[in-house]
Image (cartoon, rainbow, N blue to C red; front, side):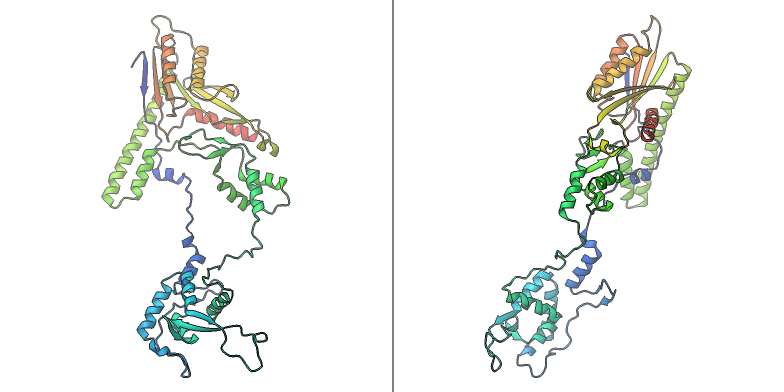
Length: 461
């Protein structure tokens, strides 16, 4: 204790289950396209594995190696029999070990386009429909088309597609499946721009908490996505955009509704992660014991707060217990019509001082044009409250002050607030001042109940 000022860092935690704390967090699901059913079906088909068709739900068997050495007709003029059964199996395995685009490039090299060597009687280059002829090779050995299809287990349609591309002088075919633009229900890019432009009309601000940890901006807590979508429909009645699409665009713009509070308990989160990743029962029991010890300390700290409240009610004149806290930003004016959401509203700051002995609350309210919300403004509120409600001590008189607050550095836990308490002690208002903190994540104070009454009345107004 120095100059009658005592600072204590008492941990105040409510004994809640750590699993419930983790469930309260918002988890963002990561998109993994490889797990989609259509993508998985397409990959299995390209790899020659069995897959289930989309429409008929029929199981298509996997591509198996040929069992016959030669399946072409006896009248085949090509020497297809020089491909042994082992060679065919190796070719099939090599073919399906590559992607669809690489398979198409390999098949394109197996197909050679040549000028027709002869035509039917009476046909010329101008009158004949046959513009070219195709020959087929595997490992630079000429084979018939039947053997080519059998070795790689492909269809006539795939060979015909590659032939059509060769006629167009396309020697490196690309996989264009699913990349067409024939989507009649697709939302136009202009509509997306309108949605983003509409969302940007709403004023936003940085978070009251965690400014160094997040770059997200926050809209007014009086807003929600339903109100925003109704405003969009009113402004653009002829634009066909669903609420689901509107919500999707909003989530992609790095915006949130309301204000983020970072008062979760880091120790509880660590215990939860350790319990989830524990490999043995002994390790789990050890972590659980540490968690129980942490919760018992939180319970003891909360009991100390209750004991201070009892002292203030018994010795109201000699022991003063104050709970101080800063409310989240209030926006004014609060009106029901939609135009107010597009306008820049005034940010109002409210600092509450709750006297636990008398159960009276003093609200210090100002707006952003008057001052900010830093430690200087908080110190001014404390000095004003003390000078208006208490007189300086007479010789021999004693009065003790206990101040409870959260662990937020800006308004409570800084050197300027400490100097303020030193100033009050030197001026003779108190003989002893104790400043106690609630830990981040377990910082529920009686001031929060007072704020809840204000916010409830604000919503119903």
